[in-house]
Image 1 (cartoon, rainbow, N blue to C red):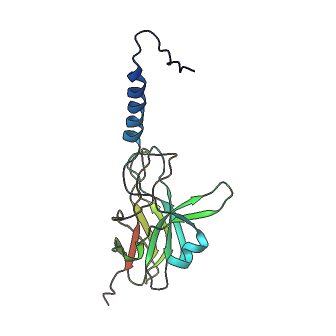
Image 2 (image 1 turned 180 degrees about the vertical axis):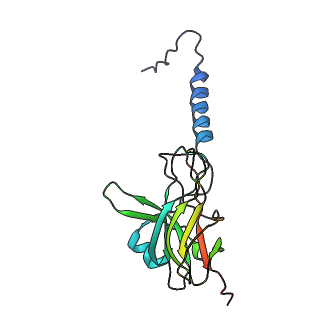
Image 3 (image 1 turned 30 degrees about the vertical axis):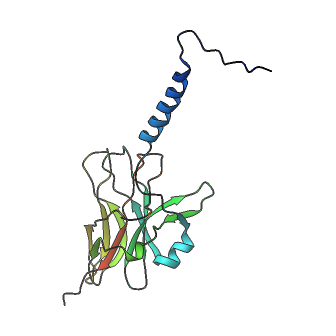
Length: 186
């Protein structure tokens, strides 16, 4: 029994198909976000066991997303360290949060005032609607007055990181926040 060779349209070289497949594979790889692997999202109860109680929420700052950034939850542990971790809600209403391995060993990203009680978080106004401003911590000081200050986040290095959801986009690695209580100056 003889094998028949596939027929190709006139002017279509058999190697052309392989070149087209290779080109598509290259474009898919080139358009995929490069970067570290994705860290796992965990149920809220598990996160609170590792990072303390969820005390407030806000949105990650975005430079130009034409909307707000991914949700972020601020957790406070028993030592007073505040952890800023990305949050997601499933279609069933379950709250999940992202905690990269090694986060407990990651360096502090900023501080908050000694004696302050954190009452909320917000994004600083940017003056335009193309993105959201820096993450701000809202607190009640020891004197009872309300204050706020922008806080700084950092990228995890050397392992899995938390990634923004694909929609509304863009796909990007998200910062973590680790805030230590500032030294008391009294």
